[in-house]
Amino acid sequence: MPRKMSIEEYLDQEFTENSRPTPRTVVNWIQSGAVPGTKVGGTWFVYVQETASDRLVNRVLKAV
Image 1 (cartoon, rainbow, N blue to C red):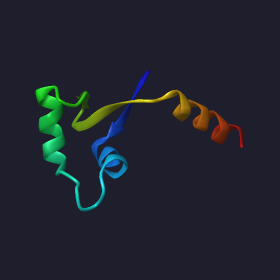
Image 2: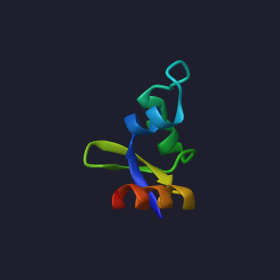
Image 3: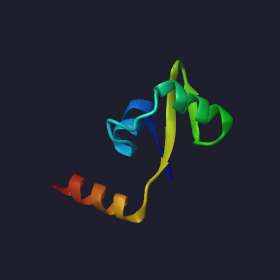
């Protein structure tokens, strides 16, 4: 199940500091359909698909 991630979180997770596109570029990608996402209120979000290993790590971290 995909989860929503803010554009800033997405940029921090997916790009190095020297390769980051602008937030406006990510909004353009969402609007063109190149990146799955949506606008909620005035904030844009990217849909990120969690892998099975992500779910396992999250369960372990919650149990600690």
